[in-house]
Length: 437
Image 1 (tube, one colour):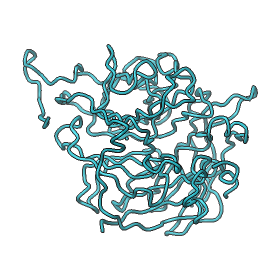
Image 2 (tube, rainbow, N blue to C red):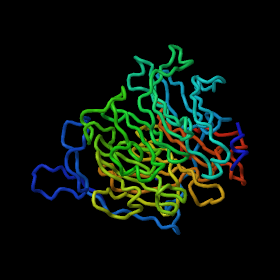
Image 3 (tube, rainbow, N blue to C red):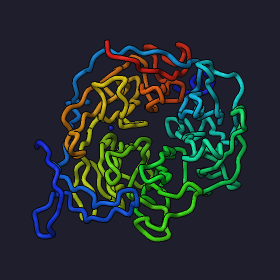
Image 4 (spheres, helix red, strand yellow):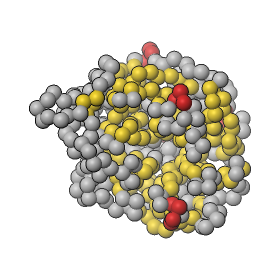
């Protein structure tokens, strides 16, 4: 389990409903069409403030929140990445570097794998050159009709005959007893990839469509309309392209994204997203580190990578809501809709990773409290679980209404944790947050 670790160590608001064409509607500079069939009425337009830039000296620029009551749901893992729940309440998750889909039944981790995917083997030399790999078996997500067809999606990194890396989106079918899963077919193949910026996060949107985040290992591809790299993709559950996508015949829903591992919806037309800023090893991007973003997007918009970073403005580029100069960096994210912890209902959460040798960087759960009537306005932020469990990768709301968080301390970057070495303390974990202390 620890072999990889031992080798290397995200103005007060108001809502305007534009009833008359010539009224002074909002200022988010968007038209009324977002390419989504989810809502029959015209989408709301919201006022927005200028991009908030959090300087390096301010760190996270958020107060420490309360201590949390946390249970360890599962431990002894190696880089749990994707997470979902079956209709009977059993939890399934992926282990990134092992290529395994595993299951927790009635609270007990089962020893065998539900499925094993042929992921790319990443050499020690490749990891060393890039300070660790970000590929492997990443996202897992139930088909919206899982109760009828027992199908699920998985996204993983593979290696081509010429030794290059690429990513795949596959549709799998589980056995009736959920004990195994077999590949039914590949939905999207040859997704451009590399050792970094794999993307992999999936969600079913409020419109019933499947959304997939794909990173841009080659930075320029994020601005190339004919490439799916550096994009948020939108497709029908069977993998086909919806007729009402922003560009006919294209999967692309959003462009100019360096890498996202976390997004959710504020309403059917406004998507909340955490996005990674640049690092020194970007192929074709700016030589810098940090500038992670919290964004609000509508269909067809462009986040600007690699032409713009931070709060820079450019024609046709959507300005972020918040930019952190110091790297977080953000992993999974979710809008909490439950009421098990009512103080959090309506808050947007992002897991952050950071590097252990830099204690002020990441390693916490970041809560963003939004104005309930305007996604562009942040009312408050706070830092939770700071360095309590190390690097955090995924946050998801379980069927019980509580938040679940995975750690990512047993990857190459987490293995740099000398004081303490979280990976050696029981391996990676899946945590269940059950209350505020």
